[in-house]
Picture 1: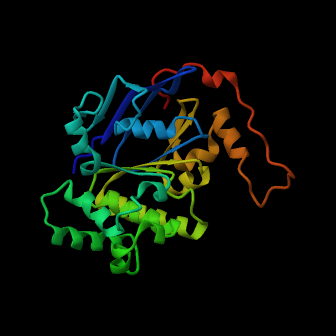
Picture 2: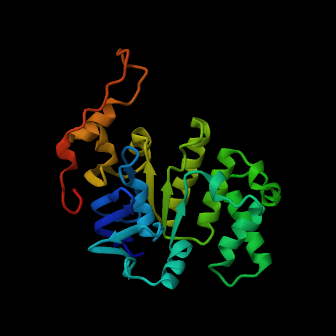
Length: 286
């Protein structure tokens, strides 16, 4: 098995042209992703989701993506044709969106939608696609795959919808999965079940996982490495086990703002932002 990086991002920049001027959403981000669980955390608007979408070329028309290098293995994602990107999406890199209720087609049954994700990337027939779909529904720990296969998206709970989305993204057997807030709308018990599913699949298939999240405690316990973003830039990159020992003021501020039952303070601290954090940092920071 190749131990080289699956994704290589160097000096990634994403900007949008708006009626009020140009908005720089991502500014000089650099990192690599191997066969590991990489967490990207930060406040809303820090550039986390835009980084993930830029990798797959899912940026609106008023957006512009630039980079010194953005590659999946040896494939240049920045200059790849749309035909190449259609092959990359799903076949090699899949993305689990934040809210399955808006990602699933409401007028197509669950089984048919998962089947489509398999048929698009293979030459399989309908019978094989159905069998693979039922296998994937079982793999994401759905107790009655046959019933869910025939169900409509509106009949599914949030936790079930998220499992269905994971099954749909995993059925082409990608090498990288980008999970954008995969557990944000779930309660604690279901959240842990979904994370366990992702953990099993990453471990068993030797995949790379890029998990975008607001939850510092979650990425500290689940991921191998963590990237901290603010204002479209990387503040620091560190091992997940060292998150609580960070020396950067932004990371420390985020950690102090987390609620805890063992704290005596009546109110949570408010993050005090340093204007220097928004200064141009260059192509990422390790």
